[in-house]
Length: 113
Image (cartoon, rainbow, N blue to C red; front, side, top):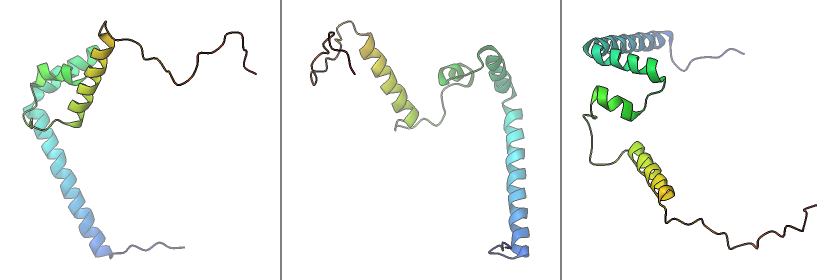
């Protein structure tokens, strides 16, 4: 069974040409950004050799704070805040373990079948 395209060969050639142009522009822009920020790229490469995995707190000293910070928290900010809240509640000395009052304690003399 032969599969047919929903467009002509001429249209396919135009699409291919446009996609090649987009990819070439993106490639050129990427090279330009790497060249502009060569020092930062080298610093990050050094950090990666030391740590292998970098987190946001590792990147801020090298790159600085994000320039496009908005008033709305990002999903990452919300995640980080929730994680910090969980850690803080676990570390407090006054926190008591939660007791499950829904079922009676197990009788040590009864062995499950």
